[in-house]
Length: 348
Ligand SMILES: C[S@@+](CC[C@H](N)C(=O)[O-])C[C@H]1O[C@@H](n2cnc3c(N)ncnc32)[C@H](O)[C@@H]1O
Image (cartoon, rainbow, N blue to C red; front, side, top):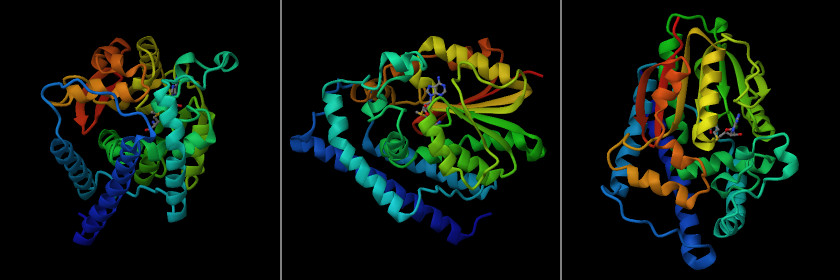
């Protein structure tokens, strides 16, 4: 049980994060409205419409759920590890310096600036995109440095709290197991934010952090430097360099909406292949159509303002069928604010 002071500290920290990232969001909107950047695309009204009040209510519910999990001892009181004040301010300056460049890219609808024939001989074309019109795609150190700020701005400071909900099925799996003998891989780990929370809860868990972006893996290595035992694996999720039936847990967060439908199925088969019988997949990505009342219009509009070429197909996917066709048994599918959590087991 957490003390009242700890709960108050949590509320103050998360409140400050939400204010900071929402502040960035509104400042970038103002920049647009001042005529410095293209106006957002006019949106077709969709019913039922999602009000700011509903979003804020759901956001508050997410934080209550996060705190309740910590209070129940499912995971430790979260520490977001956003860096020191100097780092936070430096990233904020980078964000605003990048705004005009990203806005110009968006106006010109240049979502494949990072694509080149040379790179396409080594990396899949679907990966060579400026997702969200981000500078450098997934290919540069600067992009990796800015990524988490951009994601938190997009989710109003809730991205880490959403990722932490994956710790609930993880705790359920870990119950009664010795963490020193459990092997887990986070596929498309990005800059390692989720793994930081995993290590806060299970410091002795054997973890592989895998991603196709070398720049993002390096950023993950830096963010996770307190745990030098993590193994970093540069790999395409379509062809994972893990033996058949070698992992107890596979996690993957926010990958599927950025790959084409055919690739989702190949990756699902890889998850199933590398899991041991009795192993568990813990998967999170965006909410999908029909998951939450009032959100469908919002989800459909999302790719209009962000370069997300595969998002439209993702929100219509039947994830249960994808994972079950791959040989897993889906145990849970549940909305987590703007995300969706799927838990699947590999049969014994
Ligand atoms: C939206 S980010 C999510 C990162 C992280 N999981 C998070 O929670 O923020 C998508 C990640 O998928 C990685 N990625 C995209 N395609 C991939 C592939 N085929 N194999 C492995 N990683 C891939 C990108 O490099 C990027 O780090």
